[in-house]
Amino acid sequence: MSNDQQGITEDQLHQAELIWNYHRMHHESRPVDVAIGLGSHDLGVAAHAAELYRSGLFPTLVFTGGNSPTTAKVFPRGEAVHFREHAVDLGVPAEAILLEPNAGNTGQNITLSREVLVAAGITPVSVLLVSKPYMERRSFATARKLWPDVEILCTSEPLEFDHYVKSIGDEKLVLDMLVGDLQRIIEYPKLGFAIEQEVPEDVHAAYASLIRDGFTSRLINP
Image 1: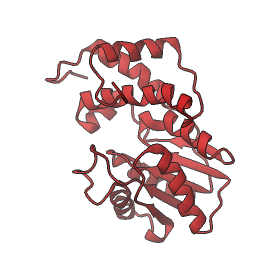
Image 2: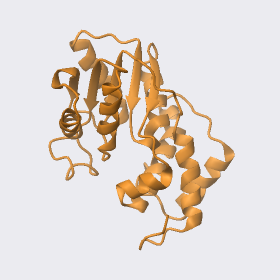
Image 3: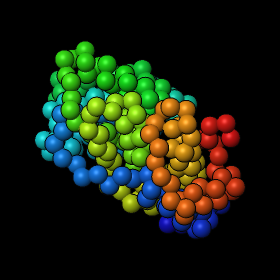
């Protein structure tokens, strides 16, 4: 992949790919009671959720998410609303989709989706979280903390790192997001937001290197 005008180096991309590989859980998708599509700037989440629904892996799909500074202009009616519309366009029956339009973070994605399911009379034993590729591990750690009595599986579009960056069209945004998600994996267990995840030394070194290089726009308290 060629670098763009932002001056991102091949070494920085290599460091980012180490973090990318760590974020992905490599769970095998299989039939579950419900799936939850986590809102974000990435409409590929809705497309992948729709594909899995059409494959018969679950009968009910929840889309969750309001807006963030990253998504307000792209999805002005809210992430979940736009995701649902895209999934319906891709063949998912509207009646199979539940909507949670208020969540502003991953913890709220989980807790508010659970409330929506309860209101619909659904008490799942197994849940498939559909997210951006680099959000798999953080969504897993969050759900295991907040919803410990269900089996949690994670999935995302099966894209390689370079293909994903090209699909988003903004290398720096992706690297900033990778770093920000890893910081949350490290810090959130201390705040009670997620279960702990071991971070390998090479991944931690890549994280520190990218922070030194200025990929900090998505850090909490940078």
